[in-house]
Image 1 (tube, rainbow, N blue to C red):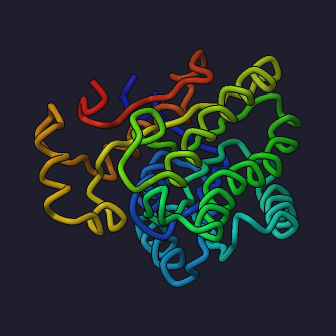
Image 2 (spheres, helix red, strand yellow; image 1 turned 180 degrees about the vertical axis):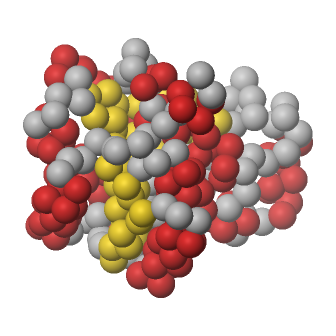
Length: 252
């Protein structure tokens, strides 16, 4: 059987948060090529509309949605509308996230609260809204964007590392709770990936990180998207509660 058939998401409905750029946009494009119907969420309406347009021009189906993952009422209503439109929700990718770098001495209460609200609570809000629709069909895939720093720490990222470590804890809890009901939950933990977020890191720091990476380079958004596609497909049916590193060996 051709690889494209093995990794098909044909007929499935996928929601991708933070789909306006970077890894979220790359994964949305790949899911569309695999045949999924896509609902794309982002606070930036212009970028998510552009991603949806690219998918449409390539022959895919994507609905752009301007949404804030921290607005629980709006997210629940939106997910209900998506399920009503397409009859189901099969895949959720919790990709939306922010980085507000500050050392422990400098991090403010507002920066701490905002980071955990978007990165951690936002993932919970979206998953809580998606799961009832998955339960109706006895199957589903919950995918969440953690990070290398959740397991390794990183200078100046107290809040970010805490939020990404919390995602791992939630994912493993969901794996236990929902696994018997046909729903799997897994995390992907990228290392240094060539995206706008990472490009904001000072060049000196980036050169050090690349030098420490056995692969000798940064990863690409498409390489992370490939892992998400595998975890969303039937090939990953016995993978549950996992944290898959996509870091070129940096965690070694």
